Length: 120
Picture (cartoon, rainbow, N blue to C red):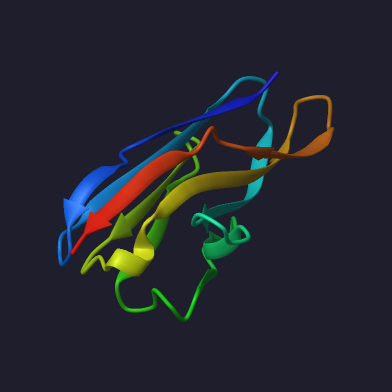
């Protein structure tokens, strides 16, 4: 069984920075896509940043130039560096990983979510 554990959320003033991390553990053969999503109150969950196993990234326009995604394929960990935070960035942030287990089963797993609150 595989689980994802997130950390790094919190309260920060506008213009500040936070770094989120998400580590996967368990029966992992390979992780293809690692991604971050967020969900603000009353809104749908939306993708923020995605990185493939080849290192190709896709960043949402709303955070481009301020957020960066990175990953470590040995540690099975993905990070989201968030700079120049705005009040609009306030949301619960979720990591998502496309995981292939040792018995070659594919699954899409979510972290538990971490709250990011930006005060203006």
